[in-house]
Amino acid sequence: MAKVLMKGNEAVGAAAIKAGCKYFFGYPITPQSELPEYMSLELPKVGGVFLQAESELAAINMVYGAAGTGARVMTGSSSPGISLKQEGITYCAGAELPCVIVNMMRGGPGLGSIQPSQSDYFQATRGGGNGDYRTIVYAPSSIQETVDYVMEAFDKADLYRTPVLILADGMIGQMMEAVEFKEPKKIDLPEKDWSTTGTKGKRTHNIVNSLYLDSELLEKHNLKLEEKYKLIEEKEVIYESFGLEDADVVCVAYGTTSRIVKNAIKLSEEKGIKVGLIRPITLWPYPYEIFKKINPNAKGVLTVEMSTGQMIDDVKIAVEGKFPVYFNGRTGGMIPTPASILTDIEKIAGGIK
Amino acid sequence: MTIVYEKSKGLTDAQLHYCPGCTHGVIHKLVAEVLVELNILDDAIGVAPVGCSVLAYDYFSCDMQEASHGRAPAVATGIKRVLPENIVFTYQGDGDLASIGTAEIVHAAHRAEKITTIFVNNGIYGMTGGQMAPTTLVGQKATTAPLGRDEALCGKPIKISEMLATIDGARFVERVAVNTPANIRKAKKAIKKAFECQIKGEGFAIVEVLSTCPTNWGKTPVNALKWLEENMIPYYPLQNFRNFEEVK
Image: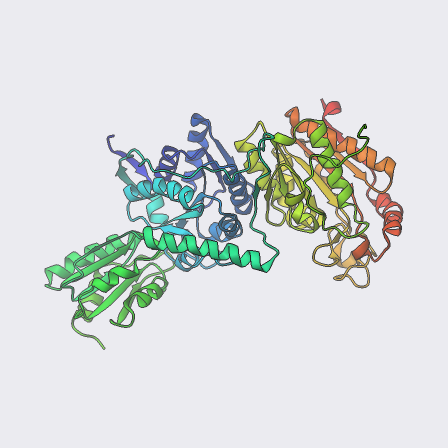
């Protein structure tokens, strides 16, 4: 199929529909409102339903109900709205309901700003809501990748019976790029024999639920979830990396920021500094293993984020104290510049204390 | 031998956990009987709340989902929008529906969501141990209103049926009680109508059922029924507020 020029938020919607998503429950918030707008026009054309909920809380609970019937369903929002949705996300995780949630991150805390940000990393990768759970988190860096991983997200959600997050930012949501909608991969997915569609008098009732009043039963449920998360950690890590083996400095960045870092790396190479890159595409599960490939003589690892430093915690876990870890970040809707990243790379390569 | 009475097929064999004298069991029975009598049990999907009836998903023999506190109408909306041919109902208490879930119930009614809500009003938070609800009567004691509900501090109890009856999408709204055999029969009729409203695709339907909580009211089951009649019914009058058969 030929490439088309699309805005990020609209491309998310188109990819979801292509992946068989027929239901979207949303609530307006900048900078993701083009997603519900797009769905309101397009879903009825494929026999689906778009519904504007009265709140983010209602939207995610509508997602819960729809997912409980076995339908492919999505919601989207931006940071403060995603905070409200955490109640429903933890219930979906507990009841093992497949669904896809898009967060076009903006500055925080609180009402923050409407400009792009990456300051929801902790919330996205550490569960976000209450209880022992994780969600798969894809962090695309282009609209093409966003489209590809939105489609993949529906399959993984069904495969593992888990909510999946697309963690992008206002930049990805608002910009336009050429994208190609490839045919989704065909993978074998389990029957949704747990879903609530009416017994038809042919089976005992199905129950979609996250409550286990008996502590022993809840622990058993928690351990079952944990087993699933271990399997996801084993099978679903995705990242891009280059130049690690002979790097003087290794940069770590995801999403929008990784594109700025790539520019800074080119500038560094012109100055004769060898810089490697690790770009996590899944933020959970995190690509800890690839950090073992870093040149043992590298001077340090530079984490670049649009936050005051959140992913840096995972970078520190990954390097196991073998390298000093430095940080370059802008926050509140500000964006790091290639020049400032270059300055940090030069300092690290020169051996800063 | 002729069977003159048996447990409704709409209920499972699970033993109810409700306190002695609590009328949740009666209301469960009425809902289950209606599902069977209207021949919709096999297509029904119920949504249980948070509160005393949280375990309703174990008691109704149809497919069930458990919602978070107050969100049952949103969950039911998600189900109904995917499966418009199925029958979807919520079973919610007054802490759930009249406090934390007011936005969800108002907007489900506003959208004329084709679901049926059974709203059990016993004027108190039962499951958490007798705290004040938005429906607690003025002067009624609760663990968070130890001297009785103070109107100056908390306002008057909320009248959900009267409020929802102002919304066009709410096509059937009735308040009933289960304190006497006669009232129980009337309650069943209203519950049946509320499901018929959905079957006919009319819009949102709700039955508010005045119910007892002997444990947290500190009364014997018999005195609780009497207290309901003498105190709740005067404030929460039993009546039909909207009926799709007459609205047209």
